[in-house]
Length: 221
Image (cartoon, rainbow, N blue to C red):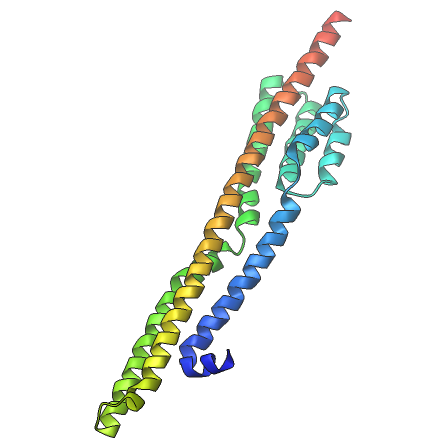
């Protein structure tokens, strides 16, 4: 491996550094998304049971003790619910406020989920360019050797062509890896965003249902 790096020249060293960066970002994103992947159905069931009893504080605590963007978004909506109820807002104003609070928080969720993905996209674009640059440098060196030796022999061009091909192969391999990983993470982020949006919609429905039930009980009394 070290022999390849030496023969590939400076461009292959830079490409290798890009591959290490890609691996680091991949591991970091895998761990982050794994921690964020919480069963939203169980969380919503737990939150809903507390809303049915009117214990919004307990519902907020449940969300705060659960990791991930889904729980964090629900906690934002529930805090807004608590605030709007305390200031005496009407049900339609409460619904609008909860939706607005969770939508505003959506940008932070996307930023958290997409963090460092731009590095993968940059590597996917930069690696083949570095490979082509290394290829050009290798060919220049090969023909420079031919000029110095005054004859076209395999020995004269072998070193430069080897450098060129190693850089091309290295750049393409790293670019392919970064592209696959970037597309994989973008797909996972999109699914997370949809899960957060669905959980937010369900929370609003549960809140309205709990408020409607509370109103009916108050009227019956």
